[in-house]
Each structure stands twice: as C-alpha cells, then as structure tokens.
Length: 288
Image (cartoon, rainbow, N blue to C red; front, top):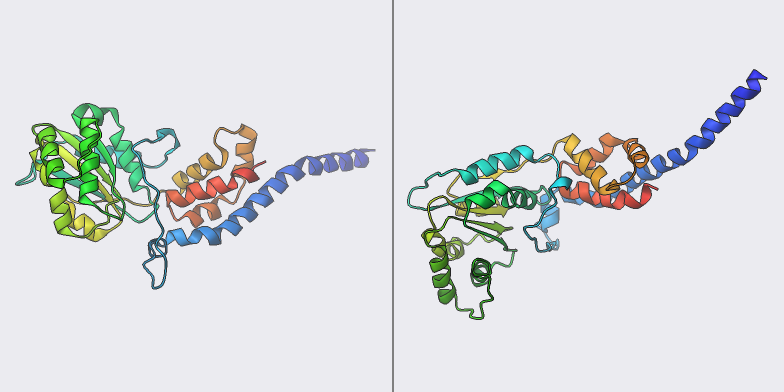
C-alpha cells in the first residue's frame, strides 16, 4: 500500500513539474537560438558596418525621456557625471566645459545622458536645458536650429546659419546652460568649431555633454577628460533581461524565468544593455 502511495505521489510530482520543465526548456532553447542572431552586437565593427562590404546600421532618433525604474547598474556612473555637471570647473579660455561620454554601440551612452539630463538637481542648476539627437548625418545648420527652437520654444522659419547663431548667442548670453548632443559622429574639427561658436557666450559653469562611439570625435570636441562607459556587471545585465522578459508579471513567472541558464544568458549579452533588452523582449512570449 505504501509503495502504491509513493508511486502515485511521484506521478503527481512529475505531472505538476512538466509545465515548468517545458517553460524552462523552451526558454533555454530560445537563448541558444537567439545567441547567433544577437552576437553581432558584441562587435562594434559589425554593427557599424566598418568591415569591407558591410552595410551601416541606421539608428533611430533619441529623445531626453527615460524610465529610470527600468535601468540597472548605472548608479555610480550617474553620480559621477552629475557631480561633474554641477561643479564650477574652469577650462582655460572657455566658459563652457565639454564632457564626452564614449563607448561602443549598445553600451548605454544615451541612457546615461538621459539619466543625468532628467535629474532634479541638474534641472535646478541650469537655466537652459536642450537635448539634440545629432545623428551620423551631421548638419551644423540643423543642429543650431534645433537648439535655437528649444531655447526659444518657437519654430524658426529662417534657415540662415548666421541669423540663427546670432539669435542663439543672444539667448544664451550670461545664462548657465546644459546642451546634450547625442550620437555625434562627425570627425571634422571645422564643423564642430562652427557649431559651438555661440556656446562661448554662456555663463561660466555651462556644460555640453556629447555622446559618441568615436574616439577621434571625443578627442576633437572635449576640453575635459573623456568618460569611457564600461559594460554592465553580470547581475545588472541579468536584471535587465528579467525586466524586459517579464515586466510586471506575477512572482511565479519570475521564479520560472530565474531557472534559466543565467550564466549563459548573461555571457551572450557581453554587458551591453542593448543586447540584454533585445534578448528580454524576444523571450517575453515564451514565458507562458
């Protein structure tokens, strides 16, 4: 009788475990399947199309908006950069300090810039705040126009660069500002020198934050040491995968996902938030 009861209990356990095991197997299989598709993001040259005959990958425009609750592992980076923004450092011959955030594609440069841009202390410190997505197709007239329209909160119908820069000069004169130029790729020093001409009329303590994946760009525009952004830790990478795989799902689903091969999933992401988000998003439909 006892043997029969034990057999019955074992059967019940196996039946109850089957759905969980199937979920685990499907998700581990999905990670293996996706690793080949996502691996190219780990090598910047593949993403940028720097290899011979490869096509460049276009990047969607960015904005200053960010959901801080969905970001992991950047607390120290944020604190260091905010302290730098709020400091009254003096760069010889300039009222404006240029801070560059450099790192490979997908490492989170834009996200870090968004975090500091939206910080309450930063908002209170600066009189003018402007976010500009520069893009690879750099155009000094377009970028100047975007900045001018942001500080005036009006549409500018005149595309003459001299007119716009004179107007921008008048608007920033004597004011402490923060301009974020996201994804600057242009290596032409003349273009940068032209763009930043009105910036020098701002008050001391004004800052320009530039994100770039290009070391040459960083060396051209900066007048402070470059902030080189590092990959996420393994734990932060895992939390990011879970966030995008589960969202606000129930605790049982969280436990199921946590039974995945965590080490393999994290390793495939190479500490790059872009890959972690992509992996998490592609795993969402396999959780249930």
